[in-house]
Image (cartoon, rainbow, N blue to C red; front, side, top):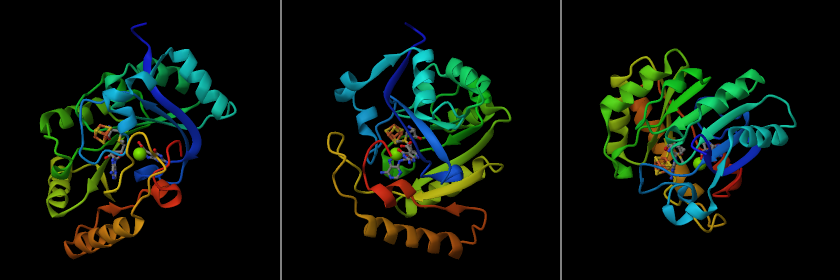
Length: 240
Ligand SMILES: C[S@@+](CC[C@H](N)C(=O)[O-])C[C@H]1O[C@@H](n2cnc3c(N)ncnc32)[C@H](O)[C@@H]1O
Ligand SMILES: Nc1nc2[nH]cc(C(=O)O)c2c(=O)[nH]1
Ligand code: SF4
Ligand SMILES: [Mg+2]
């Protein structure tokens, strides 16, 4: 089954908690496996190979059937996340879903470009700042934006500190046509096997206030600063 999709979880409808589509009802398909290891990743259960046993290879038609079951057959925005969903063969799912009236957004770090990005309704590029410990591949980020070929594309960048903020400004200069969403980092992400672990929302709020001050003092009036709404509402809980 080469065209099967490695799925960590399918859940929803909930609301999109981050970025351009914040507040919009959506069903999540979270794929398993990632080519990155961000120091603060909040989805390690879909990244760490130790959780590979919990990921299921699923046929496109079975993934679609689960999306339809969860949405009661009513077309809804589907959010493809992970892990890195760009390393999965998602083109056929997107095409099948769109024939049925569903819309698709995909969240990726911008390390792998795919021709089928052009079939998305929204591509969310989330390049990783210095605090993640990951190395940035600028050429590949550019290729991802090009691959979207007209599909609406936005930047969503996590900011923990001043170095991350400067990185966000560099990315915005590199891709000047894309809207920029900044989100404060959650420094208390869930351990992969315990999503009931508490979140330091007060600490995140303080970082967000700093970020708002930083953006406004800097005169970066095109940037939007948003919290992770699902974290405010449900902490580190999974499946929401
Ligand atoms: C879990 S990732 C999965 C998709 C893809 N691998 C990526 O990083 O874009 C989804 C989003 O969550 C963000 N994220 C992950 N851990 C976070 C944390 N501790 N605080 C804030 N945002 C985080 C990522 O930056 C990304 O924008
Ligand atoms: N509600 C909700 N919104 C989200 N936006 C991005 C998420 C992700 O983990 O990719 C996420 C998530 O896990 N839940
Ligand atoms: S790229 Fe995304 S899923 Fe992968 S480790 Fe980083 S935040 Fe987690
Ligand atoms: Mg998340």
